[in-house]
Image (cartoon, rainbow, N blue to C red; front, side, top):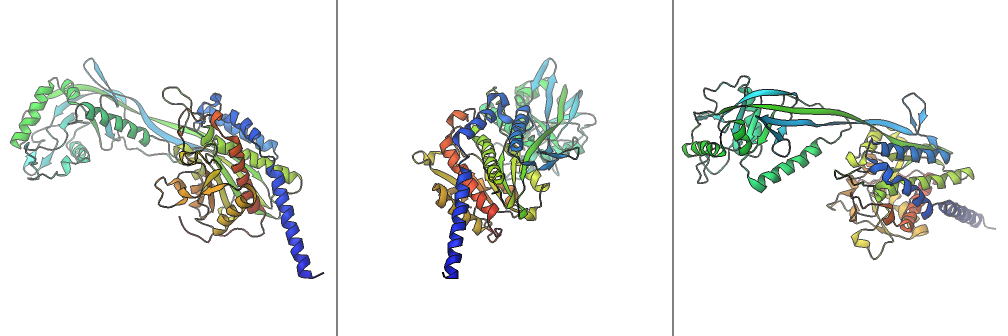
Amino acid sequence: MNKNLIGGLLLLATTAFAQDDATKYAGSITPEDLKKHLVFIASDSLKGRDTGSPGQKIAAEYVAKYYKEYGLQPGATGTDGTKSFLQKYNLYKRSWGEVYVKTGAKKYEFNKDFYINGQLAIPQEINVPVVTAGYGIEEKNYNDYADLDLKDKSVVIFDGEPSDGNGKYWLSGSGEHTKWGTSIGWQAKAKLAHEKGAKYIFIITDKTGEDRDKEIRQHAVMTRRLNAPTLKPVQENPEGIAAFVISPEMAAEMLNTSVQKLTKAKSDIDKAGKAASKKMTGQVSIKAERVSETIDTENVAAFMEGSDKKDEVLVISAHLDHIGVSPNGEINNGADDDGSGSVSLLEIAEAFSKAKADGKGPRRSILFLNVTGEEKGLFGSEYYSENPLYPVNKTIADLNIDMIGRVDEAHKSDPKYVYLIGSDKLSSKLHEISEEANKKYVNYKLDYTFNDPKDPNRFYYRSDHYNFAKLGIPVIFYFTGVHEDYHKPGDDVEKIMFDKQSSIVKLVFYTAWELANRDERIVVDSHKQ
């Protein structure tokens, strides 16, 4: 028989056996098993798995227990130097504690009656005298601080800058603001007041009614964002530039006067274009407590050692955390986001462990990585990228699973799809392998809508694979889109489409099987990020 023919037949036979092996072990991935795990991971008892919470830690112990049961090895090192499934790290949070302003018997509430711009720390209540200084401006021909001693005092000033009421600002001589009247003019005013000796600065907003309420609500949202956890400690400057932004009503109480008199004082400056000579005074008590918090959390890292190519590592990732409990007490269970990805890793790990037990284990090593801190800012994967458990230059790819259990509005009539994001951005071979695996085994619609760099959602940058891509590691992000329960209490197990999910999990498994067992490592030959 022709030698070339024999060789060809042997190659076909080898390929067929490899396909049969992959199909055999993918058979262990079932809707029933996925549901069994998700019922626990997304249960009310875990309280939404907020990063660092008891529920998140229970979820971490749960997946680690199953990895151990499947015969995987701990992928991290514990604080005592022993191997561990938990890669521990900290997040750091600075937030407001008790914050108020008191005048007489009245106590004003933070982010309700007033808000604070900038950095400030007053850990204990203090009493301070206050004095008005017009608009709080000093220029060549205009000075609100003339003959004013601010030592050990705080200053109360109007927002904006004086205008003649006909669209002209006195300081510019036109309809254009000077630096004092811009949206960040408060910074210049606060800096000047500090230089003049003022202890604290109170700015009377010119917004009224619903506009003022809206401004306070917006600032409250901004405050929560600015006080979000960080991966590295934030150094604040308690003596930095800051200002209390208050209403005319609050200012009147502080100064033992009326809103009408304050309004007239401002109007007099505007009409004359000159600083007011008469000052109003008062006394207030203030407290602005800053609270430091360290959040300890952990990624779960489970390792399956390969055979002849064990020094190369494939990462399969998902995030274990969710957003916890809403302010109204409702639990956000995060069944789809990203309970679906977390339990998918368990099923893929079990399939590979069965293959390994039969002597069909992966040639390359595989790291199953359940990260936390994703909802806070991709922190778990960022921490891993800065503290990799296995060499970055030996990491061949990351297959990241985040929300694969539902359908979005665009696919209500055709649920057999999955969005793939990033597959071609760093490696053309990875994209090719993914396409072939789908065509050969699953035959789902691979939707690349969100892979378009012009897509406004920018999902490529919004899940944990991106911290691998930044290191030049090829990635695929598996995703079925946003639905009406995204980040809401309605994201529950009852709405998960487990048949659909199991098909996508098998697609990830088949892709991982090829990546882990092929002769040649995929190469980075594309730069579309």
